Each structure stands twice: as C-alpha cells, then as structure tokens.
Length: 309
Image (cartoon, rainbow, N blue to C red; front, side, top):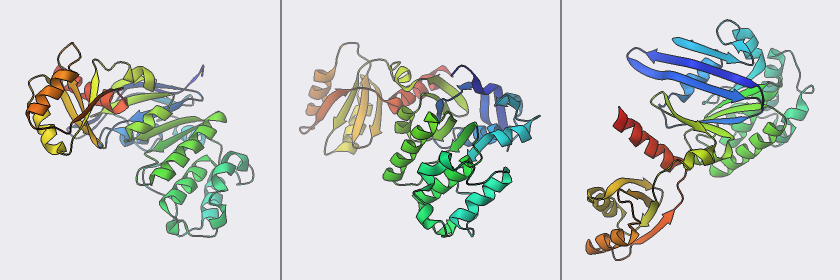
C-alpha cells in the first residue's frame, strides 16, 4: 500500500445552487478496500461519476491510476472497472453474451482473465444462457461484477452494489470482495449501510457533499465521546418522546429495535435514567451500556457539524 491509486484534491461540484460536493480530499492506496459511507443524497454517486470520467468537476483535480480523469479519460477508462448503482447491462442478452461483449470492448476474452472472475462466475454459469433481465437481484449483482472485472482492471468502483438485494446476497457479495482484494485489486465501494463500513480497510464518512472523517472504522468509532446506552420498552414511541424531553439528554436516536441514548452528565447516569423513566411508567424498561458503532459516530459527527455551522 505504498502507492496512491486514487488522488482527489479540493474537488467540488454544484448543480445550480445545490452543492453536491464541497472541497473533497481523499487518497486511496493500492490494494486497499475503501468505503464511501453516507445516506442517499450525500454525494456518493456524483463523486463516483467524476472518478469514472462520466461527469466533469467544477474545480479541483482527480487522478486515477496516475491519469487525470479529464485529460486522460481514455486511459482511466481502460484501467478501471465500474459497477453503477442501477443494473446497466443488456437485459436482452444472455449472461454469457453480456460477459463476452464487455470483454471484447476492452480487447480481451473471457478465457484470458477467467481466473479473476472464476469464483464469482461459477455461481451464475449454470444460467449462462438466461437473459440478464430474467435474473434475480443477487445473480444480476454477480454478473455486473464479473463484467466490471473481465478486463482485469487495477481498481474497481462499486456504487451502492448491495442496495436492493437480500441480506444473504449482501453477505456473499462482501465475501467476494474480500477474495478480490487478495488478488491486489483496489476496491472503492459506496454504501448507505453503516454496518458495511466495518468490512473496509478505511472509510470516508460523507454527508451533504462534505467529508466528515476518513480513517479505519475502529479509529472512527473510538472518537465517540461519552457512554452510549441502548434502551427498550414495549412503549417505544412514548419512550422516545420521554427521552427527548428529558433535561439531561444529549442525543437520542432509534436504532432497529432499540433506542440509542447519550447523556450530558459526566458521571455514569444509568441509575438516574432508570429512575426517571420508571417515574414515567416504564416498568418494563431494559437499559444497558453498549459500544458505539459507525452509525452512532456518524450521527454524532452530523450533530457536531450542524452545531459548528
């Protein structure tokens, strides 16, 4: 990981009065698995389209594999693989026809680079004569990844590749990426799923077109200040309202089947919180201190940025 494969400096992009990207600075190293993490509308797709030469920036510079994305866009395209957010292969062509077509575009064949995609393609090869449009979401995902890899790129860009697929397919996809990383390919993946951040070497947290933090997932979560508590009750909506009205509340968010809560007091407030909520009729309350995850840290960073603006 001594060489930077992607170098983004002071990159900005606007659509009219809307700032899609603001002063982005990122370096991705060779062989790294790098995640761009943020909700819908954060700027992930705009950044990926610039990186893959499909969109021009307003200012700043971007180099991919040592080539400028504007001046040397043909060289960039020959060096990368790209899997866009929406399935973009030819629906009326079969699995095998799609793969052969994309190989021919880059002047190669399926046989020449089959070793790179073998583990992935073997799972869809029994359906090689089926039209791409008739595949399941998970199978389309595997075909799109195979087509992005068939010319043996130095780096692949995967724009929200697991959106809309089931949990099993999501897990399988990340297992495939882990194997690809072992072959030396640099992987840039964007996702709105915070749990997928833990599977990357490093991540950039992005919101409203601004980078909030870049680091290893464990290093990012270590910046979370103060204890974090998970609370449950049969009256979750009323519990949320009660906590929001509590004078000592610092933050309160719904997380799955629980509520994540932080307190402004320096000392451990768990006993005081329990007593307060019991006085409000929460006799079935469950409360425990937990370790913060990426999503907790992301929400905390969002609040801090909002306060500083």
